[in-house]
Image 1 (tube, helix red, strand yellow):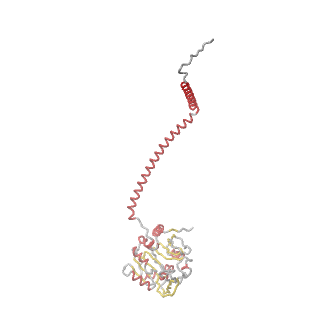
Image 2 (cartoon, rainbow, N blue to C red):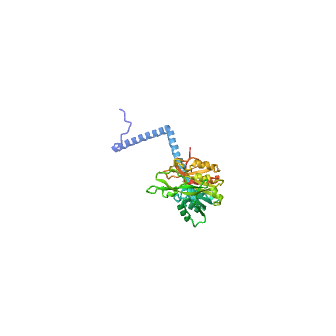
Image 3 (cartoon, one colour):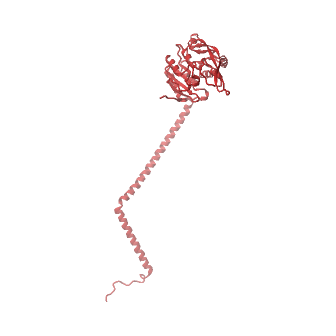
Length: 359
């Protein structure tokens, strides 16, 4: 009979709790062996993935550093912009007292404001106001520094004009009309037929020519008035030779005024024009733009600008050196002898008016 080689279990080994402890130990050892095996496998097979994760972490660290650097640069630029803005504000405060101001349109029409502006660019400070009416334009030109020679043929209006500036030694008035020759002509008197007095002062529409009119204003009579040419007025000494600016507003007779200049040349001549489809210019009007441009070119006026409105609209625009008028438009054309004065005028117009271009 063979002997048993294993010693019999002790009393402790027979206890159930000891058996459970051994079982737990075996399980833990088994788990540890599995983890060790998986770690060895991961190190052997997934090294590139781990290296990638490490590179990614390092790259994110570099990106964070770059972002911090960009923030620092943005802050530096912001500080520089703030400094520049402060310098601009400083220079604006210094420059503000001498910066040119744009006059409010409510002060007067743009043509009158332009004539006043050109005072500083003309060699002579005297101006002629033909068709002066009660002197609203003359008043603005006097304020600018001009000495004024005003012509108004309607007796009732002339008396108002003369009385208005009676105290000024810079204002000279004449109760005559101006045209191409010395003569006597019928002067047609306008009457506003509207109940609302739409045309306000109907005397503004009196004319030496019986041109077309809208249906609500008509010519309702006439008087006889003396007419003189600019050439004749200079020759008689009633006008000095050193005139800087001539303004004409004769309700359809302006071309005749230009024809009466003779050999006299003024730095700036301003004349009213009507388009052929403008209600006042459909017939018997002597102030169409192309005709006046042609006349003035024969006298050496090669530069001009046109300030105009279209019938039915209050918008004012301008254009330069184009001889045709916009359909149904009316306004004033400025003629120049000196190119530099023309440039000053066009610059002024560009700053305050919308410019029209023709294709």
